[in-house]
Length: 285
Image (cartoon, rainbow, N blue to C red; front, side):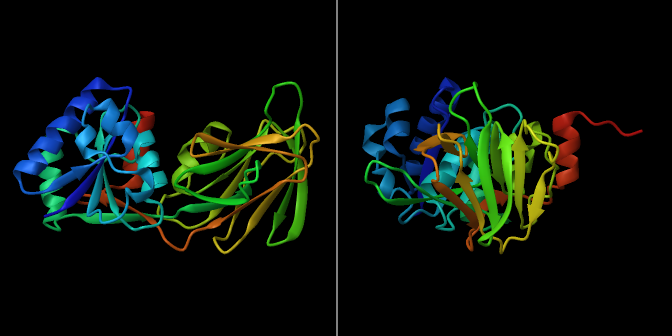
C-alpha cells in the first residue's frame, strides 16, 4: 500500500473535484490518500485530514492539483524530506507541473511503478527572527525569499554581506534572493536573468533600486548571504509568496543553499529552453 499526499488549489473547484476522484480511485487500488487540514476542508474530505506537522511522514509521493503555487505549497509542507512531487496542471503559466488532469491516474501509476525520472531542484534555506518570542525560525523555499518595504512611502536600506563580509548597502523597494528555479518567478519580473533550474547558485536581485548599481548578482551555492535591515521603519519577509515576518531595524535574514533538493517527478526529457519558448511564445526565425 502506498500513501499519497494531495495538495489542492483551493480556489479551483475543478481541482477539488479531481482530488476527491483521486482519493476514491487510490482507495480502490489499495492505496491511501491524505491531505493537510485546509485541503481536506476545501474538498469535503475530513476523513483524509492529517496534521500539517505530520503530513510528510510516511509519504511515498505528493500529488499537487493546481499550478506552480501548489508545488510551492507542497515544498513548504514536505520540506527537505525528499518526497517526490508530481504536479497535475490546473493552472495557467506553469513551469513546474508535469501532467494534464486527464493523465493523472496513469501518471500516478507510473510513479508507483518507478517508471519516471526525478528532477532535483536546489532549495533555499531562510533563517530569521520572527519576533514575538518565537526565536530563530527556519524555512525552505523553492523559488525565493523577499525582504521588502512594508509601505510605498520610502526606499528600504538593506545591508548585504557574503559569508560575513560586507558587500554593499542597497536602497531599493526590496531584495530578492532566489534559486535557479525561482529565476523565472519574481526575480525575472524585477529584471533578473534566467538560469537553468538544474543549476546550483544563489541569485540576488534588487527591486526598483534607488542607486546606480542595479544589477543582479549570482554567487556560488556555498555562499551564506546575509541581509540586514538598516531602515528604522523596518521591513517584511516573504518566502515563496507567503508573508512570514515583520522585521525591525538591524534584524537579519540569512539565506543559503540547502544540502537537500526538492524532487520533482518528470517523464521523459523536458528541455528547459523548450519550456521557455512555450511559456513566452518565442518563435523560431
